[in-house]
Structure formats: C-alpha cells, structure tokens
Length: 292
Image 1 (cartoon, rainbow, N blue to C red):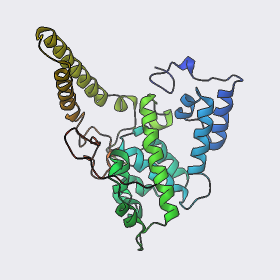
Image 2 (cartoon, one colour; image 1 turned 120 degrees about the horizontal axis):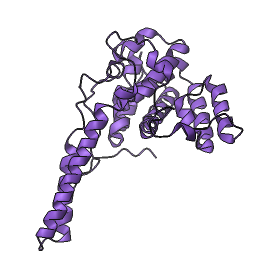
Image 3 (cartoon, rainbow, N blue to C red; image 1 turned 180 degrees about the vertical axis):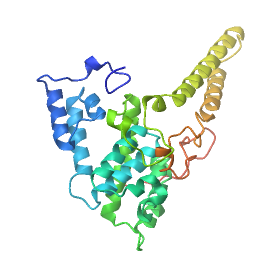
Image 4 (cartoon, rainbow, N blue to C red; image 1 turned 45 degrees about the vertical axis):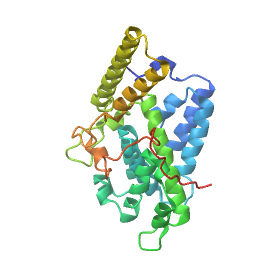
C-alpha cells in the first residue's frame, strides 16, 4: 500500500489543503525540518498531533541537562527494547545529525558506560515496570565517574518511557519506514536496511498462527460443552483460563533469532528478557515500587 501506514489508505492522510491537519503538519515540518510518517498519520487527529509535537520538541530540542545526541541515543535504546526498527533507524539518523559519534551506533557496547548503565532500568520499564526499586535509582545516582545527576536521570527516564509508548503507536498504526531510511547506509556491515517486510514479516505470521490455534482450541471447547451436558459455567471458565495461559506462555518468536535486524540486536543486552504477567492466579503478587 502507498502512503505512510500499511493500515490507512493514502487518501485518508491529510494532503495539501487548507485545514487544521495540514497546518499542524507544517508546524511539525518547521520544528523537525521534515514531516515523518508518524506526524503524517497523527495528522488525522490534529489536537493530539499538536500536543505530541510540543512534547517531542521539549524532550529533544529544548534546553535540558542531557546533550542532544545523548537524548537520541536513549531513544534508540528504548525503541530497541521493543524491536521497533522504524524508531531505531529514525533516531540513528537524528543522532548523527546533531553530532553524535558514529562509533556508538555499532552497538551498546561502544557507548559510554554512563549510558550503558541505563540498560537495566530500560528493560524493566519496557517489560516489567513493577520490578523497579529505589535501589535501581540509587545505583544510577551513586557518586562516581559514570554517575547521573538527578536532573539528568529524570530526563532520561521520561525519554525511555516516552519511546516505549511511541513504539506501540508505530506498530499499532503500521507506520512504514521513510524512503531515506530504506536506502540509508548502515554502520553494520551485516545489517539489512529497515523494510516493511522485516517489520511485518515472520513475527506477524507467527502471532497470527498462535491466534488461529487459540481460536481452534476455543471452538473445540465449545463443541465439547454441547456434548457434555453436565459441564458447569465455572468448569468452562477454568478450562478457558488454562487454554489461554498455555497459549500466552508460548513465546511468539525466539529473541535470539538471527533474523532480528543487527541494527536492533546490537543495542540489546539480555535480549531474552521480556514481558511476564504481573500476577498469576495462585501466585503471590510481586512487591511493587510506589514512587508517589
């Protein structure tokens, strides 16, 4: 499909006409130097786009404790946790434009230790935020050569959570890479450019197969219920929960799969770490960190 999204017809995206959507896109262009596909899709909701771009501008371009290139590198780290090749590629380009060291883009192992120290809290915020403790904060603030100031850490954590959320928007709206991302040279000799096929290929197929399998199981349960007149609603609910649990516990794809693009894999430490249910029936709830 033509256009910035694989889900939204090109004709529904705001074009050159005198409406508020286009006005917001022009503002976005002035702020960022170009209109990316996220802004084009978000232009369908002009008020939301306006708030979004104000937030983006404050986080990435206004005065703050973190240098501009480090802000973009933190965005890369956050997007990589969710395997969002669109955002990783976008901010690799932005990182270089604001004077970032190209060597850092070879992978997290080439970045300064101070940035690498964010890896633990990045993966927790991305997948299991309830496991964050005050010790994680204290470790980053502890005096030393690679310590963070409180102001720096606050900005870094806001950037991490912002880009974790934005990755969901990119996937949910089927955002496609810009043309310059498709053809951009990569700092990795073995990496392939971000493409629609890589974003919506084998991973999406595996997920669809799992859904189909789950639906088949549900269908069999319903048929069995008709045959077994003595089955109660409680028993059916229990069976459904068991089937659903078994389906959810099967990983959708191998996190170490070699097909995972190297421009994402190189920014991941502990790539097998992922989402796990906050509470499971019959298990004690984990301790939670309450910041308020």
